Image 1 (cartoon, helix red, strand yellow):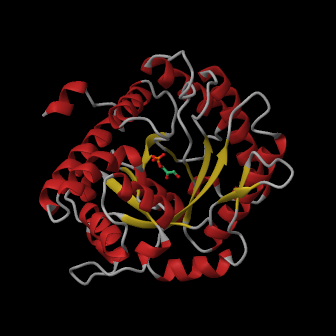
Image 2 (image 1 turned 90 degrees about the horizontal axis):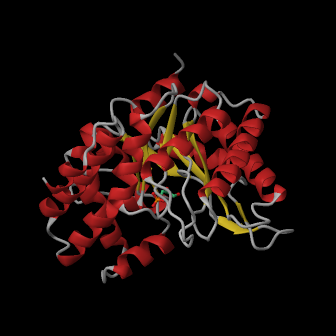
Image 3 (image 1 turned 60 degrees about the vertical axis):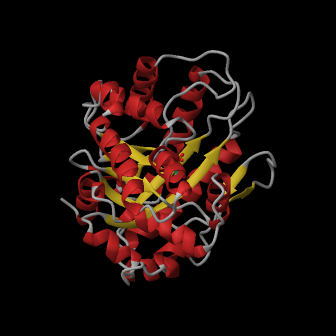
Length: 336
Ligand code: 13P
């Protein structure tokens, strides 16, 4: 087994998943202001440090994706953040793209940037103890979108990023996010997601990326959030499995879903059903941002010094998702 494959399995094996705590300062400011907490670097650190020192980190969280600001911060107990995460039994990771910018030639769409100087930045992150990285490509859905240009250029960037990350002995998370914004059907989401993922792997293979040392982070197959129709959770699971089975090469060890704006319980329920019906060799787990942090953030915002209470809320959510990653979750557990 290769070293990278081993890391991927440590992150996602045994019912573990990923905490995506890599919100940029802009996004984190929106989240904090949304619950009336001033977005200072101290507050951003306090909330994140609270989660990173929770007991569920050892059993449920195999990896944490950090943002550049956080990875360089020192915890209140004087630990470097990557060291705190490692000491809890989890792997530190880092978002390395520099954000999605307007795509010249198709100005409604976006292209993710960050390749310039990436090799040097990766070396620095690796020296800080980072084991894996993330790069997110983003795609809108409508009659004409995503365009061939957006599908091609984002796949190319994801592949160049992945090759550089593996060269530096880290596992790349490949995140092509087909957004749920819009009134499109789940069938449309299926079609577009399938096209996007296939192109990504075509480029990854061209760029000689070792697929056994990659984690795919896709969206689930859902109706658009403005669609009048809503397929059932069973249907979401069935379509998501079908889509991934036909578009992801079998060498890939694990798939970790983003939550993409689903509610916490909805994301957990869908993940649980995906695992109940999982007839693939892929590990199917989570790499949730909002769906792991929302309740904890709300609770914390009422009293930002209530560390224990916040950790309890976070531990519950992490546990629910860990059960779902094994197909063992049930709605009744939510109220316990
Ligand atoms: P959400 O789970 O909130 O969609 O965030 C995951 C993520 O990392 C987006 O890049």
